[in-house]
Length: 208
Ligand SMILES: C[S@@+](CC[C@H](N)C(=O)[O-])C[C@H]1O[C@@H](n2cnc3c(N)ncnc32)[C@H](O)[C@@H]1O
View 1 (cartoon, rainbow, N blue to C red):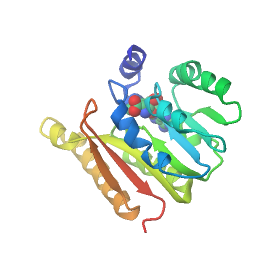
View 2: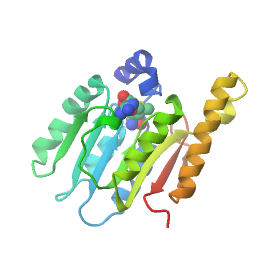
View 3: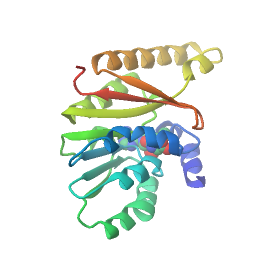
View 4: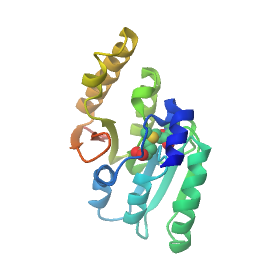
């Protein structure tokens, strides 16, 4: 928690939150992985200190694989030490790979059945958001899905105190999220028991 907070202060644009996500949100973010029978290829993007990673590792069984992409070396070291090395010792037959890289440049071998994404999109310029979504959708299997989250009511809470530039950015983020949801059969689940309350969004590669 302190590690997360210090990274949030020094690298707020990348980290985008003051606390790691809670257990309820993590559970919702991995729901379709849990419901999937058979071997699963999973990609996690932006794990931070690993609240979603922990849940994903709990779900993994023989035949599955997990790739993780994290831009921040501090979070990579923490993840390796706390979660990944102990997991590999217990399950040497399940491949778990950590890529220390921005997702835009990661060398990944898709397709993936499930992508779990923790990136703070509201902190990114719209062109970068569009390009990251394109990358992730292209990495999905035909029947794959992508889960990401946003904090509930950010626009409503921020709009009255934000300047014109921030309001315009928020409007563009919101328009992009709506377009993605239309194109990719998006659904949204509100998770009130998170700090702050969040909405888990799920997109499918194919909207039908
Ligand atoms: C809001 S934190 C989320 C951490 C964790 N998933 C959670 O929910 O608590 C965002 C994470 O995304 C990482 N990140 C930001 N930009 C990234 C990028 N372009 N590629 C990969 N990771 C990135 C940050 O370093 C940070 O770990």
